[in-house]
Image (cartoon, rainbow, N blue to C red; front, side, top):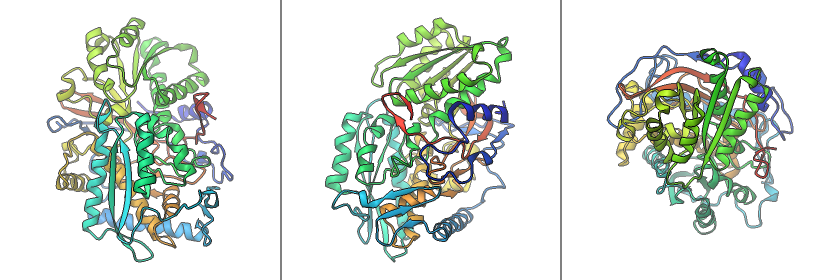
Length: 528
């Protein structure tokens, strides 16, 4: 399957992709000048490690286009960081000498003068440490996501052993992590974030999950505290005007839903030109984001009258999804999509096997959030996951033998093992990608005049244009101030093979610069 240029144009009409970002002061170069990349893949399967979620493809493993050793990777990143610092300095961006403004590309501005009385750009820093706060689920239905913090811990331990973070002021620091468990309950997230910023006085706060992040990002932005790399694909993470301190390095739910819609369109002929589509979605802002993007695409599609679709919702803490799955099975869909996270990712496989959907529905998709936690593996799903699809955000799988010999994968496995963590835990792949991104942000921010500060970190992230080693070749990783607030806008499309215990890649797609920014309107359940 190839996502064609025609589909990308439809995407622009549906949700404003390739248009100037809403709220930007200076759109500058149009994102429409960036062509979409779509690479069909000739795939072969390799058996993954026991209990591991694996990905294999001729376009997804080792590539001559990528460095062949960690020394080459580090040299490439040195060059890319130096180019970022030079770009910032040549354009007069960065934190002003009087400390009242931080300026970046395409009209990006943070008014530091509006920060609360007593605010410090260096709170959480000592001459030897950077205190990083992380609130995420380590228990409850989304406990698998706790590996994100463990992966970060492993990477920071490694770089501490190589000299830590030396900034332009000559300060050499290592990272001290303060991790709290909110069990994916936003009501618990709020006081834990308060503890981190008021008692622990951290330099930055990371959160994971859409409800916990949306419940705290107003406060963190009002307090001028960085909230980088939130573990949420919600479109509202891309709001540089209203939430300049919040960013994300993950795959947007909106982009994912539109890839789903394009997948349906290009397969309508298999069903006589008309198709029925069923969705199981989580009843929170994340589910609303998936739904809104899909509906916006279908509304502008030439095939809108050919696609009949229904959504069934489940509560985030629901013990079962049997009632919803029974209703969806009665709809007799041709396509089925799971727009959820946590325990339902495993439950849906069992339910589909029991109610007949596994056999009757030709195309069944798990959300990228499900793929990240490995719900399809033999250990978790037996043979119920065979033939399910996913657009997972283009990450390499640390557990897959297909990536044996890949220098980044081998290094990441070693760092995780040295820190006492299991690299075969599926979430570790995403966790290492997030950790690498924050690592590079700290390095670039520290190289700017004045050394590492909160505002310099945000300028570093908002100007980042680097080669992420955890992504499959062909997927770009960049942000551009107010014009482009999403680092990752590419994905693979893959199908799970039980026999091979591997994801078989069908295609790799890159849509860099084409996802519109989003000022999320909670009352409307849509971007404002």
